[in-house]
Length: 161
Image 1 (tube, rainbow, N blue to C red):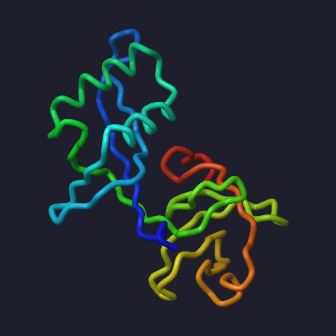
Image 2: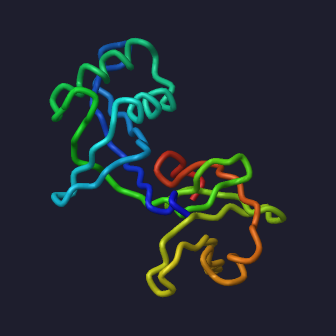
Image 3: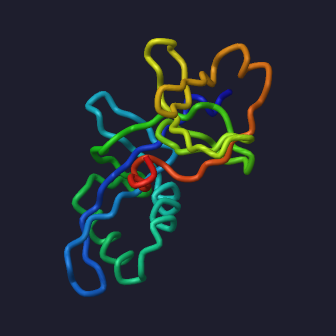
């Protein structure tokens, strides 16, 4: 359960595409530290992984890296404001990928999609499908591992919500 205390963040970086148009790219960065002022910090390797997942062209990737100069950079460490911060549930999907708040998952045996949320009423992570709640931290989930697969997240797959 050490993974339960990991965080990821979303940062939007303005840069140029191949046609010199100003675009914004949302990057989901794993393994972030959270500061008292709400900013986040992360190392260059975590940022490289996020950029790779964004599937940018070489030119777009170059302009993105250049645009990061406006933020505080300490050798291999970046510090900047985040659009959002999400916590890891401590659980992994069937592919061994950590499940975070905001992920969209499919539960084994169901064809419906669920969103991973933090439910303040039960003080636990849950998966939400319309009015149904299946708490991930309840005794039934603790004793039986329910196979899930991540199919996206709420920030990059807005059309699937």
